[in-house]
Length: 509
Image (cartoon, rainbow, N blue to C red; front, top):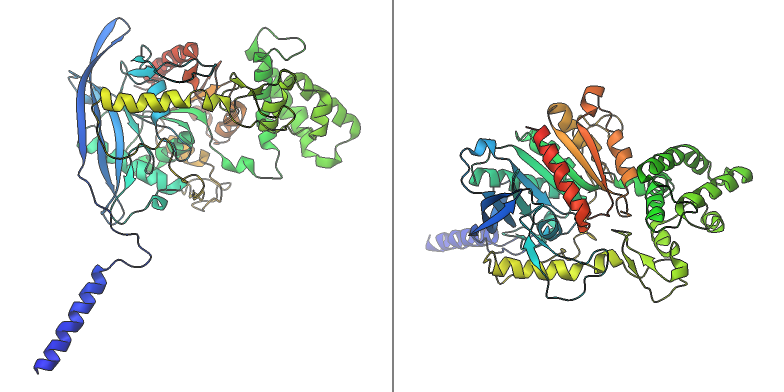
C-alpha cells in the first residue's frame, strides 16, 4: 500500500513539474517589471502665453489575449497643468514608423515642447547639440504622448513574450491599441478628445489603429498622417504604379535644384501639370510595356526628361522607369553629388561618382547623431529618467523579420476581400471603415515635396481609393511643404505645419 502511494505521489510530482516547465517552443520567462514613471515640471512660452506643463517619462504594461503581461511600453507624455476639465482637453498619441523605429524623431523635432537644432539641409555634424524650447509645439492645443514600439526605445517584451510577437502589421496595431487603452484608463482620459499623429510606417499603423480602436469603443476626433505609406502592394514587381507615383516628386526635386530648362515660378501649378501627365500619357505608355510604339516611346521619354531634369537618353535607357535611388545618383552627377532619400534637399559626396546608386542617404546621416545624442541627454538630464536599459533608436532586425500579412476590417470591400488576409498591407480599407463608422473622424494628410521615401502623389492615389461617399470625402484634407519626409527639418515648414495643425484641431471639436 505504501509502495502504491509513493508511486502516485511521484507521478503527481512529475506531472506538476512538467506543467511548470516551459514548453520547448516558448521563450524563457522574463521578469515583469512594475509600471513606473518620473514626472518633472516645466514652462513653455507659446503665442505670447506661458504654459505650465508636466512631463512624464515612464512605462505601462500591456497584456495578451490571456490577460498576461507581455510588454512594458515606454512613453513620454506632456500634459498641461491646471486643466479644469479633462473632457475638454485633447490628448494626442504620436509615433514614428520603420517598422522598427522609436519615436525620437517626432519627439525631438516636431511638435513636442522641445526640439533639437540641426543645420538642415546641411549635415549637422558632431555635438554639443542644442535642445531648445519649441515655439511651434502643439501643447497649446493638446497634451501629447510619444510612444516607442515594442523592441524600440526602452519598450521591451516581458513574461513569455518575445519581440517576434510584436513584429508584424496586425501584431503591432494590437499592441498600440492596448497601450492607448491602458494610458487613457490610468490617466482618466476616456472622455477626452483623442488624436493620432503617425509618421512614415506610423501612418499605416494609424490607419489600422483607427479601425481597431473604433471597434474597441474609442472613436477618434482626428488623425494626422505625416509622410504616408499606406499600400505596400504598390511595390510589387511587374506593376508600374510606383513609377507613376514618383514622377511628380522627381519634378519637384528638379525644380528645387534648378535642373529644369526653364524653371516655373509657381511650383504648385507646375506639379498639377506633372500630375496630369503622370496619370495620363505616362501611365498609358507604361501600361503598354514593351509593346509601346517607338514614336510614342520617344515622345514620352522627352517629356519625362523635361519634367525630371534628366537626360532623354538616360530616361530611354531606363525604359521610362526611373528608380528613386538612381534618380538620387543621376540628377547631380555632373557635380559629383548625391541626394537624400528622406529629404532630397540634402546633398552629399560619394566614393564612386560613376556608380548607379548612392552609397548612403545624406538626409539620414546628416541628422541621426544630433537626434540620438540629444534624446539621451534630454531624457536623463531634463526629464530625470534613469535606467540601465539601452535605448534603441531602431529595433534590432525588427523590420527584416516583419510579418506583412494584414487582415482588414470585414467591411473592407471586394478589393480587400472581406476579412481576408492580405499578403502586403493596404490600410485604406481600415481607414475608410473607421470613417464610415465614425463620420466625424477627420484626416489630415501632411506631405513633403522632396520626399522620395513616401512620395506625395502615391499618398493622394491611396487616399482617393478609399471609395468614400461624396459627403465623407471632405473629411480628408491635404497639406504640402517645401521639405522632405521629416517635414519639421525645414523650420519654415514646421511653422506652417503648426498653423495647419491648429486649424485642423479647431475643425474637429
